Image (cartoon, rainbow, N blue to C red; front, side):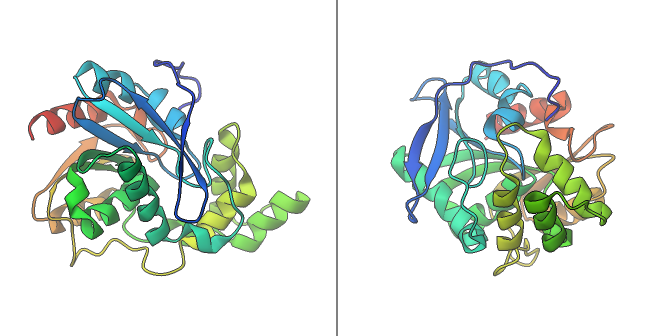
Length: 265
């Protein structure tokens, strides 16, 4: 996710899928249509390009013989960016992915998700297990990290330039402004929407599929990610040396572990 890393794979023009709410979801495809498909879903304030293309994932997966189907989640990248928090609940984000799979006529895929994308992937694997063969969930938050964001401070900054006093909120705002094209008000709406309904991964109801969990050794959620891996019947865990939450997607260890994991299926 380091913006200094040059693009390693050509970025095709997005193909848009219409969600149930009539929103445009941007999708991208690489590789042979007949090859096993890896659905790649990025983290908060990131994008398909930022999370999967600029870090070498698309390159490595296609070289290994996979088709990659990337998605810009609602509120990100080239997808629509509504300001209504109700559009960003967990069920809605899961439903968007199912709509993408249905549109591409894909019954079952391999899944790679990071941070928010990992959280959505956990829920997809639980709610619609018929769609997920096995999954890699990187940097999965154990609770609701976006709940720590002070919505009113972030909104005052976005609308009026009011300085953000809360450090956690300041960090999220800085993260959101790092990627060109991000709309801070849409991301604030997403953070607010993720507080609606059940957004926590439930260790008592884990995915039944074989899941590879991966978290950086310098990530504050490391131990809590391990708890989720231990709670998953077919869970495995790999620690990414020297990586924190925001640079873990660029880890070669992470990419190699994922390619080997998918091949083992």
